[in-house]
Length: 167
Image (cartoon, rainbow, N blue to C red):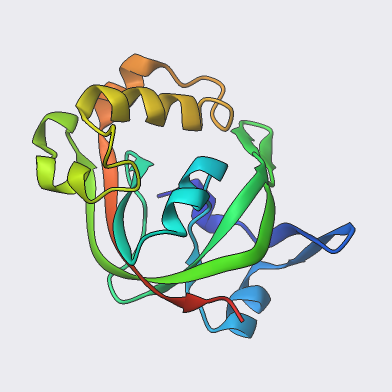
């Protein structure tokens, strides 16, 4: 099970302050099913696309037909045996996307070029780049992560279609 799916609160920046809200209340308020948190680079790239493939370490837990807000990560959280430190998110200019397809635990060797070509980083995405990108993205969150582990477990691939802005 994806431990990120068990978050009971969302920490986000609004105006000049941080706000902590109940996760389910937030989802209900905006009529969405979940969040797909994006790095600054991902967030910028997503703002120029109508649809794209998004990659997660090992698996995403996303569901076809569900709607996801795509907030910017201001500061990463982390996972450890002691618990989880929440990431700080930013929802201004936040897009909402519908999940079109999901593949879990996909070997890097089995990712077709077509998926790379329609990813957020189509200009540079390939197997080696994605392995390194995944490692760099998740290392701050999972301190025990190694590049070998990233390569061994594969990737979750979600196809998303932008359907609007979070309102």
